[in-house]
Length: 230
Image (tube, rainbow, N blue to C red; front, side, top):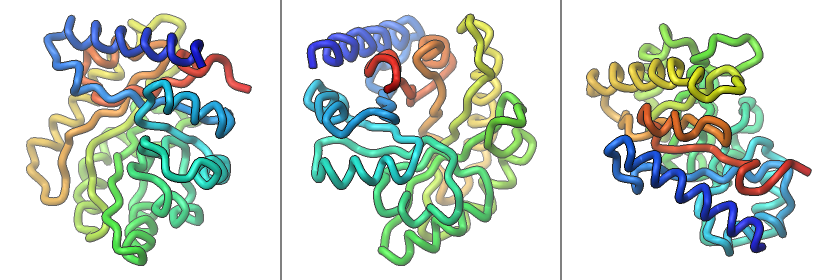
């Protein structure tokens, strides 16, 4: 418990420092604590230590934890690749889905959300690194996709998500974060109904400070809080 608490406090301090250094309000930056491959007991420890948003990558693993833990004072965000046939589970259990990258997936989320009278909050995932191994729509197609999805009645677009290539040096990620922020600004200027570009989900354990400097409002941090994955 103390290990998680201490690491969490360190990360919170670093987020505050990075935001302040960029003349930003630290409260604008949300910490998504990535709990994949961690047990329900460890997740409970983290929430007791002060974690308020949990990020999960795998539907079944997440459901098992959510059902084991029941009502806890934390929001659940889905941050992994989502297949359309798993959309109903994501809609049932998650407050925000970070990884919507196609109209097909958005339509399925909309359909499942309508069934339970929910408006599902989503982010549009951009493959900002243009890596074949990563999901996401292209930078060129992002605006058109946002416009198409905005017409769906039970889905609400809250911003963008993306990740740079893996670099050992955080500074190398900066151009990719800048590019994602530019796409966000361009979409914002369109004033599309049912779209609020309030969030930029970018930055992980190794590069979140640079991401915050470039406008991130959600950093997804696992290892630096929970330690190495089991």
